[in-house]
Length: 75
Image 1: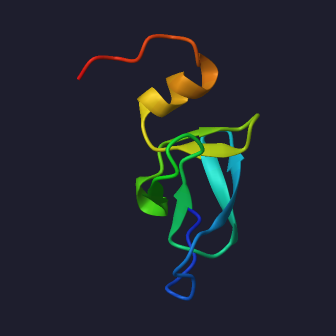
Image 2 (image 1 turned 90 degrees about the vertical axis):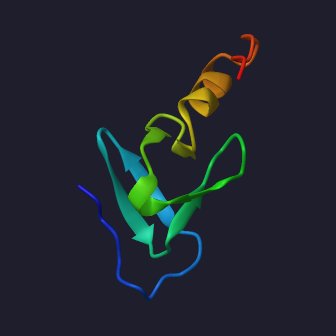
């Protein structure tokens, strides 16, 4: 379930990451990837860590956070 506020928040949102869901604490339209610092629109947010309370832009960013020494995938 997407808990998104209306158009009043146009900047970075404060989000609480839950199991299978997230809660918007402070309105905004995006969060930042903890690894790449890329803006992730809330309606496109798919990857996050409940334990670390951070968002990730891609599955590769998740792997980089949890396995920092692993070889990076080839394009």
